[in-house]
Length: 317
Image 1: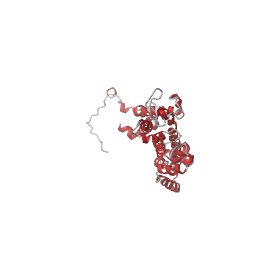
Image 2: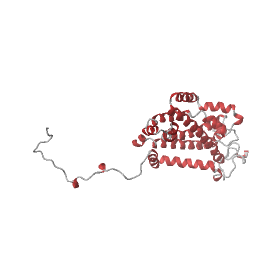
Image 3: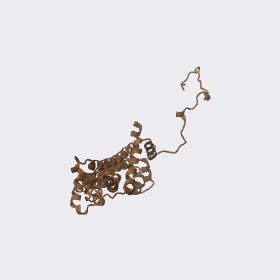
Image 4: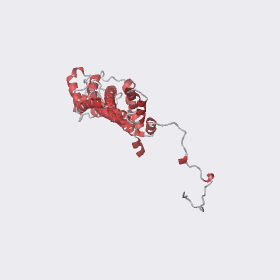
């Protein structure tokens, strides 16, 4: 049998002390195991945009829950026409509306209405989107066909247009719940599509096959294994949907088919001030700034969360 070496060939082996193990040869056994959410949180902690958006959202939530901490002036009961479009005075830092109401007080008390509509709409979108997307993606077949076609029907209808029609018909019943249902019942298909695509990817994973081999029911596999591992993109799109819902409420109120004019709302204040833009621009600009900051905060949060949950986006930074 031929040999691969010559008899006169010498072999040299370096002493162990001259060839110590380098870092690449060592196995890292210490430290806690990481997962998607742990890595995302570590990334978020180092992003200034996350902390800026989180602080702004926290301020908006506190203002909505406790408006009395920020102003003692009633938003409607202390209006005097003598102060119509008046400049700021002591106790009224932002001036007055055309009806002589305090602009600052109306902005503070209008926060709760806009945020409430945003949260209710987001809840409706999440429930309908997760239910339709999860069942369509996991069970497939005729279930997927029926639910997907139903989602396509709703997706083809612009939810702002649908909300305008619904609020026009139900104008005498207009309140926070009605306008939230009018927006949310037509705005869920995007969430369902995103979740369906994610579940189609996750349901072929090895841990799903292992659960199936162990005899776990399909519905339990969906709830305990597939759905929790598919919610990352849904959280991102839900955060952005909250901002869109706040804008939708303001748009409907501005068009006159949203909340009643007696309800505290940034959209109502912007609508009432549109004719005084040249003579008293502060009555329109200041509520618009409050609306823009709130919407921008949620959009910024959604953007940074999306990047944090995407390993490829983290690797590019």
